Length: 201
Image (tube, rainbow, N blue to C red; front, side):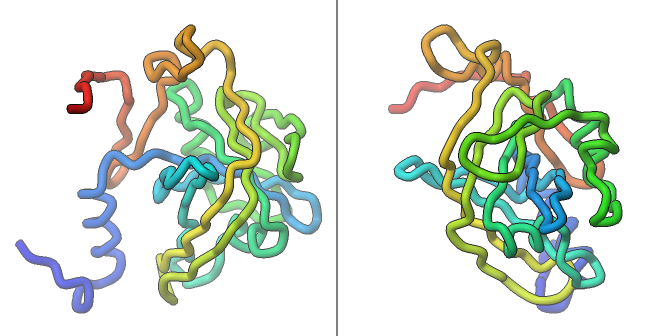
């Protein structure tokens, strides 16, 4: 089978992309509206792209009607956000916060979560997540127009919070303790508990 994105309906292109680019880590992002409402949403177009300085990138795509999501609007106005680890024990809440709610309401309350103040940015952290990366926006790159168009958010990590219980005893993060989850195609998710090791040559 061959798929030409220029002649294939956008929703089908989206399904093929998320079906083959797997597993995708999930950025669970808090932002703050001008009215002070905390927005919390998951994004599986996400990864880390450097360490000097530490850089994370994620994409709040446009909605299927072509409008901007609250996260993107908040980032354009405030330029700060916090990325949290999406872990197995919180997977249902991560999924729940993908629900579209009015911008005057907070997904934090919807999911029964709690916030704590960040150190260097204004959006708060989610207390229940074992990892939080406080970030400032370096750049927002629109990569298209219309439904599901990408908006590449490049953020610099200015403060990291890592719970002691997910450390490996040598100062590193133990993936067996962190237990992140990831997105596959359709409604499928996966656990990162099936591990194997290979030493770099």
